Length: 169
Image (cartoon, rainbow, N blue to C red; front, side):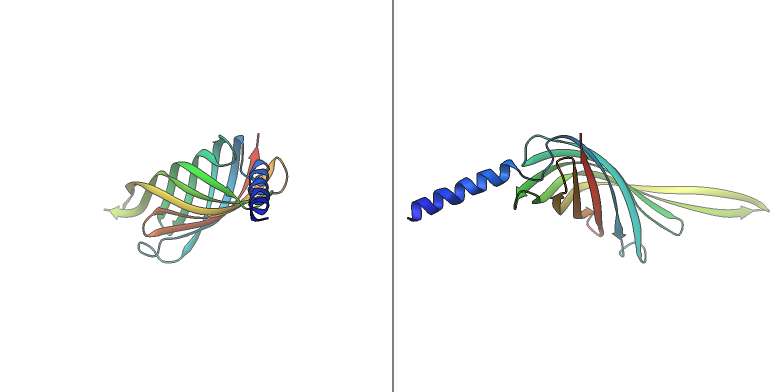
């Protein structure tokens, strides 16, 4: 009896991953979220991003993207990233996923000053190349459209939480 139950459970797991929500083939998407960088600046700011990817199967994908992490007064932060995503199906529409990748975070600060009545504007920038970590939940609304919620750590003291829409090509 236990062997039959184990075989049925294994078959159900395999069948559920065959219909999993993770993207297969090419996909693209947009996201909207919030960035917290309290170690550097005060307050949370809105973020917006776009990404493209390729799903090798229901369990693995590669993705590249760009995100405006936020603007704090005269400071702007941007992120470009390349990641590998691993998906674990929960049911036919839902999976959890983990992200591991490389990202470049660029922060720029602009300031204006006057010298003898002439105004000058200068911009200084800082680049930070680091590993990127993320955890998320993916839900498939249809065969072509899914939604995501993800928490990312682009830099150790910066957290981005966002929701995304994903279109499969």
